[in-house]
Amino acid sequence: MLAGKHILLIIGGGIAAFKSLDLIRRLRERGMDVTPVLTRAGQEFVTPLSVSALAGNKVFRDLFDLGDEAEMGHIQLSRVADLVVVAPATADLMAKMAHGQADDLASTLLLATDTPVLIAPAMNVRMWDHAATQRNLMTLRQDGITFVGPNEGDMACGEFGPGRMAEPLEIVSAVEDALSDGPLKGKRILVTSGPTHEPIDPVRYIANRSSGAQGAAIGRALAAMGADVVFVTGPADVPPPDGVEVIPVQTAKQMLEAVEAALPVDAGIFAAAVADWRIEGASDRKLKKSKDGLPVLNFAENPDILKTVSHMKQGRPPLVIGFAAETNDVLSNATAKRARKGCDWILANDVSPETGIMGGSENAVTLITETGSENWPRMGKDAVARELALRIARVLG
Ligand code: CTP
Image 1 (tube, rainbow, N blue to C red):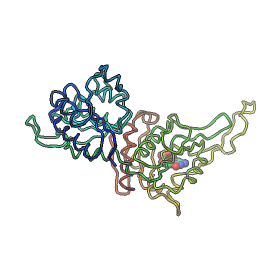
Image 2 (image 1 turned 90 degrees about the vertical axis):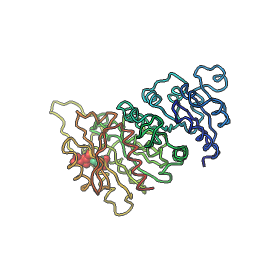
Image 3 (image 1 turned 60 degrees about the vertical axis):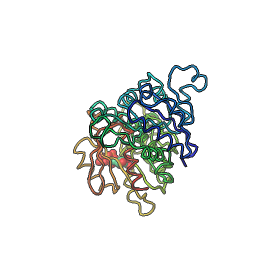
């Protein structure tokens, strides 16, 4: 499965760079093609000659090398790979990546690439533990970078702790995971997303502030893990993810119909902010101001999609996940909501205006399951989505 895959290997400047020579051998033994890039600091630890001899490929070193540009521009170099591996990833390289700096070949490639990136950090334990590195780690995780290591142990500098680069075979197995079809391959997963619009007349509607960002992030994370995603979305601000089946709807009733038509699925994730009410007898003509007084709107209750699916006698997905948007008593309200809706898991979030969550780019959720609750730290909506997708993969895998 690994044979024929193309790895762009960036070797940073750390004592662990010597292990990258072995890594090149291991990758090539498995039939992979390795294009090495050596940073300036990396050249202090391993020579370009040994790297290129082991890789059986030219080693790239300079951003402004006219010869290289003529053969293969650095942008193209960043795109031809199936996977970019950074080993060792020094504190400096991680900082550059986290801040989008591009002042040498390696950092420019990392900024220009659209292929997945796996990094193997290696540094002194104090540098690893430093708040700045931990902040960068969090940022890179949220950007979708995958990590292998660092391991804990004796370090070349004489200290002990986390900071040792993962062993070459561990990196090879992380490469294998990163290149595999994904743990959700063959699973069909339904996601509802966005707000619904409930018409008052042909030009006016009732809506809410949901941007659809969390639902889109979930769809993207599931698709990235190989799932076949059916994405039923109301009129959202953010575009739907690539590589999913998109079913656009406007109202709650249409959303329920689309959801029922999408079944059976292996899991259903109900991230839409469905309007609880619609206007009964919405006018098919634009309402006009009138001397006879203000228009009276009569509300009717919308179907509860999550509850309907959770209580299905036949065709209920094996895993049903809802969201609880709360403004107060988040845990107790959401725990009660899980029971009332009949779903398996609920992701509760505080959507009070001061949190900036609804319509924002971050989320702070509590996962509530049958066995208890778990607070996740505030993180980007993409990171929440990946965390959720990983848990789904554990259950369905
Ligand atoms: N939901 C749904 N259909 C509805 C209303 C909500 O499928 N008509 C789903 C949402 O997608 C979400 C969950 O139910 O997964 C909870 O939504 P929320 O708005 O928090 O709860 P409500 O049902 O509106 O409950 P309440 O108004 O009491 O907070």
